[in-house]
Image (cartoon, rainbow, N blue to C red; front, side, top):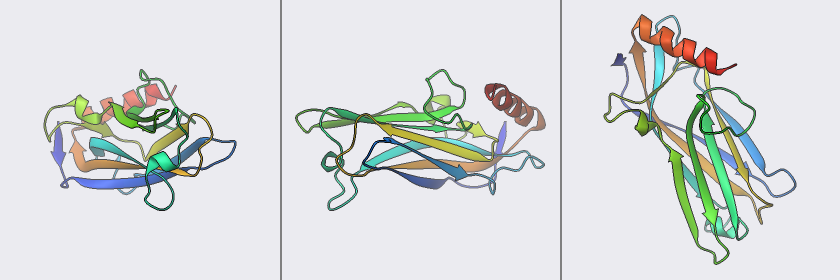
Length: 175
């Protein structure tokens, strides 16, 4: 299906959920240098990791988020303008950090690209020119909360049929 053009590399983006009335943040990871329609070149996403940190000092997230709160982040291959439900085909990865009233916290990813395949040859193929990252925190944070997304990917060349199938599916998901 795909011929690898590069080894795996990492793309990163950091979102800051600031204190105040708007508990949301968004960012874009530009893929224009990696995806080429003419050469049927796509980005193959192998995994996505989320790192939750505070803003100052030791960077511990429990210093910036209030008790009994959650921070949610999603990576999409189409710009939906906000968070989406899990059945949206544009959703690539999603994760959440919960902070309980006793200062304990847990982090989980509820959707990983590794679920799309078992080996290094499998993954989620993206033919769009950007990835969109959306995040929110429920409630007002005590201080700025940072969430860094790390996308492990490689560049691949797809057969013409495979590239067209992915492009059509992505276009259909845009509606």
